[in-house]
Length: 274
Image 1 (cartoon, one colour):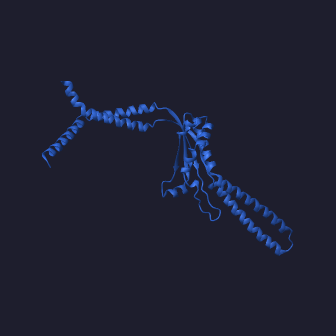
Image 2: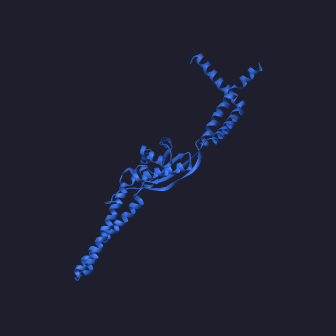
Image 3: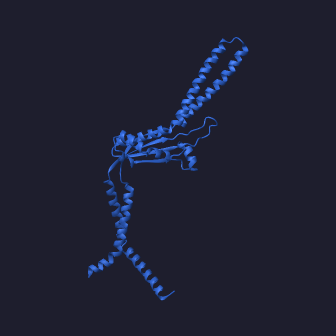
């Protein structure tokens, strides 16, 4: 190592030591800067515009095949579907019209968040807890609530066709089984032969079993498989600017200014004395 390299390292160590000594000697300046910045950030956050947030919780449902009862991987299995539907141009237009807003004012004020258990793989979380929170921010309580509830309703409507068709099919199956039950019971009452009665009774049992299975599948489709608005939106007042972020950022800037002031304090005092 050359003598010049040694001199440069020594000068750097001296400079760092001098800077550190200046900060330690005037420690109160960074502290004052930190406190003043935090106070100013808090005061600025109080002056932020008041807005309303309204959140609706959407249950995505889960589609099962009638044969085998296997879980089907459709749009409902992906929580991102809610955000895709909610941010679509036609969805924004419908919600904005219902809330009395301009689509441009609503477009950037919609957010979605998956509500998960936080345990296991993502696929398991979606299957076990297919909930998504849809939030709208607006200038009034009514606009936020109406827009959020309208978008939640649109999401449920877009995701419901499979379950609705399955429900309609099961209702037709139950009604057809009931017609067979009524017909078999009439034939059984009119039959005089014991063997015929036994055959009718056996057939009746099979039809009743099928009807019971269809009723159970219908309940599953209505209560489990069909998407639904789990909680309707209720608006709460908040500030457009995050109070915590404002305080943290302002305090950090105040600390930097305080450190700079501590480094420049002695040179400025010497210059002033001259």
